[in-house]
Image (cartoon, rainbow, N blue to C red; front, side, top):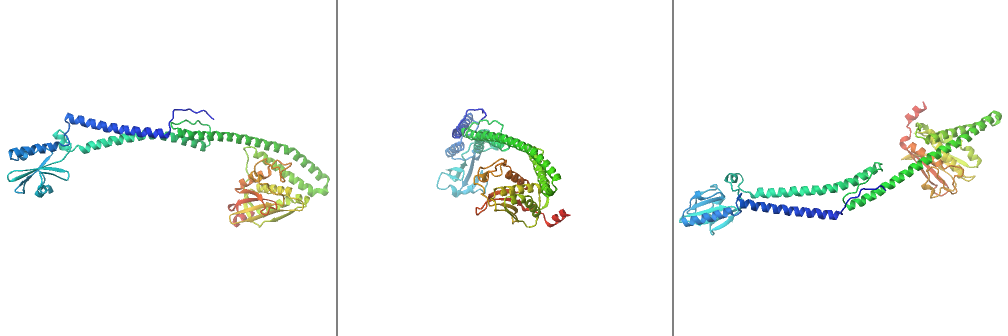
Length: 465
């Protein structure tokens, strides 16, 4: 595992405690600062106290009672008055149609409250004076008081805005630390998902995230080791395929030479020797394609519309000699239909399947080749009456050079037969399904093709033209 740069860390619980403690202390500090500034401004005379209007009203009421006379000009800022004469409205600083000019509101008491207004009452000989005021903080400067008669709202708003900005700044500061840790984890996962395994994972400030990153780093190292092993295995397989193809060339060339000499000297065996030559030529082509598969410059065969039933009959003819040698009956059933396939690739796959089935089928038994079109796909199925596949080998069928040491072990073969079939089905866009006959009477391999490869009538006719 690569060395990582370590840093001082703490748990998420410690991080959250620090966040709440910082937030609480900051809020308390802001509130304390606001109270201190308010007291300093009050002491400096920048604004009045909250009960300033009440004191003005009390002083004016006392003066009116001493003088037994009310002068409206003596009513200061922050106060309103209503003057009643014989219980009728005589004068007021309020709007004449205001609900506060109703005399009945002020009977039975010498003080009271109406809404946000507090009032004091004093009686003269035939008049009643009502002074109204609010509890509010007002600027000391008259010009400023005319613009902002009540400072309570702005002061509370300023305090609220300060608290909001502080909380937002604190949340952003601590949130960035969490986002950085999450980004580190996300970046590591993204690098692995993109296939890049050569990068260094940096620790975060959180213990829990570092534990997750340790798991990610372990997975990255394991994937890197696995990738290296796969590269090594792939190189070994390519070398094995190349060596195998090279070793096959010499005996095949000798067989072809001997067959040509026999063809010239033994006219009576012309047909058999022609078959030998044909098979040798096919083997040479397989060797060439095997060599091509081991290098990166492989040129794939182009698909074309092919009569599947004709291809099946061709494959049956090629393996008929093997069947006669072992007294094996080969049964074939395939309805006439056409499909767009890689004909030579599929032919080799079928020959491999038939060769395996005949090799493991006991003498006197039957090998079956069947073609069928279903609602979801079309298939070619090869089955035999041999020992079948072992359960363990079914997990490895299709792997190159795999041979299970059982009744179906490939003595004298390199284990490439079903591997080439599997590769052929990948080319065709289908899949190989190995298994056993449901009644347990032998092995069964199904080649499954997509319905989209079937050729319609017009395409088939154009191809035949």
